[in-house]
Structure formats: C-alpha cells, structure tokens
Image 1: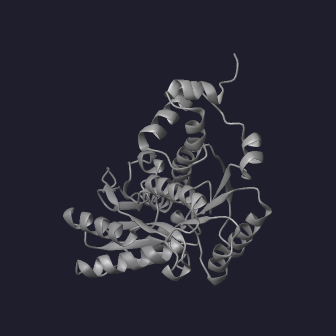
Image 2 (image 1 turned 90 degrees about the vertical axis):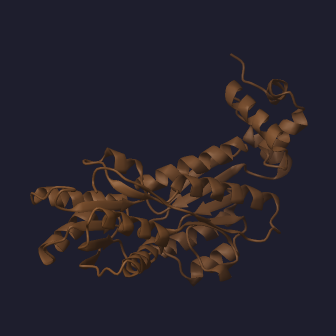
Image 3 (image 1 turned 60 degrees about the vertical axis):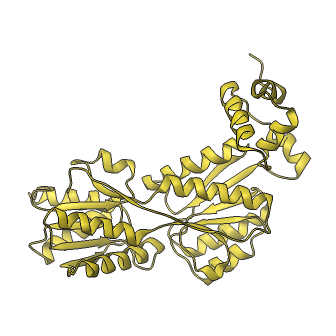
Length: 329
C-alpha cells in the first residue's frame, strides 16, 4: 500500500495543498479548516516528511517535553495531551527526564541551543534564578507547565493547588473527619511548596488544626509508605490523611493495611493528581484532579503559538481543580 501524500489529504479534506501545509506547520487557519485537515490526516494515516519540511522552513518539526519523572503517572497523562496537540500540527514529540536536580533542568534548557527541537515544554520540580535565566535566554520558545514567578516573563500553565486542597479538606468535613494529617513531598519543590501552603490555608479556612505534617523524601510510592509509617508511629488517632500526590497516598494506604487499619473505615485517604493510579488502587482513591491533561493541552497550544509569534505577550494560565470521590474516603 502506497504512503498517503499531502495531495491526498487535501482531496479528502476538500482544501488546497497549501491549506494543508498551513495547518500542519501550525500557521494561522480557520478552526473549521484545521479540523477538516486533522480529520483527513487521521483517517489516511498521513505522516509528514519532516526532513523535507525542515529544509524548506528551517525547522526540525520536533518539540521536547521535559518532566522530572516519567514513572509518575501524572506526567504520562500530560505527555499524551501534549503529543495529541503537537502531532496534529505536524510535530513529533520527544520526552526527556530531568530528575530532581535543578542543575539538570538548567543544563537541558541551555542544551536546546544545539537545535534539535523547535521548542520546549518543561515541568520543573525545582525552580531557581539560574533556571529562570536559562529559560529567558533560551534560543527556542519555552513554556513552563508549572509555577514560576511572574517576573520571569514566560508562558506558564499551572494548577490551582490551593483550591484543590480546599476541596479535599471540605470533603473530609462532610464525612465527619477532623483529625487530618498531611503527607507532602519535599517542600523545596514547586508542587511541595504550593501544596503545603494550600493545606495550611485550607485547614485555617475551616478552623481546623493539623494533627501532623510529614515531608517525604520524594513523591514516590516508597516514600509515601515510609511517611505513613512515621505518621502512624508518632501520631495516633488520625482519622484522615491528605497526600500531595497519588503515589504518596497509595504508599500511605499500604502502610495502613499493613497495620490492620481499614480505609476508609478507620482512616480516610485523599491523593492529588487524579492519575490512572487512583482508579487502580484498592480501595479506589479519592483524589484531587489538577487538570494534568488540560495543562498539557494548554501548554502545547501556547508553545505552538509562541513558535509562530515570539512577540506575543506571555500568558499565565491557571487550570481549576475538581474532586474525584472514590471509596478511600
């Protein structure tokens, strides 16, 4: 079977070859035209010849997504959303891991000068002045999927973690839970800092005093279980735990089970991220949905727009949370 051509896509979409090229290159086009072209591309299985396009327009038609840990299911959700948007515009997505060290994040941003990608979406675990400077001076457009100071002057998409924490605390109150503990990740990280402040503010807003707060060494299942162990040994009588992400929450639930405590009968547990893990855990985990898919989509859209017009005023988008209630609470 012969490979579909751009002319075949144009015929299927009922538009000109030039119009197909505009859509695939991420250039301005009407929403109706873009949808017709994308539908035709999907139906025909058309794959653009990136090498030929690169020679014509001086682009690689490759974009990079950098995250701290590809093993975290929330990043998988974000990755799929980013890929859906950029592939529809004719780009390939390369995903890379930065790890927890901000120096590695800085090195990756500076490495974009090698010209192997036309733009970068980065979800930094830690942020410092060096990272902000490297983003500002980067040779290609950069969008931050996370929180950086407004003074950075870059496009950002972040979750409203404080509101998400408020949803979690208010839900626990409806289930008559008042002895609430918090298991966070490292507080010197972007999510750790935001969620710690969100928890404190949410508890104060509801006139509650936390019975305990534990900062795990990272945001993994193993760290969650270790934090749960510390929590249960030092603070008896807890009737609810909010964890800073789903991996930590599931780790806490495993430690509760190991000690013969039932979820939610003895202790209710709530996570954050509402990742695939939340539905797969036992019992299924109540979790705050921080819009990882929407954040991925919006970040990809901002990046494509920035590639086409680097003079645009930077945008700061905040994605609102919701609570997915399951059996753990």
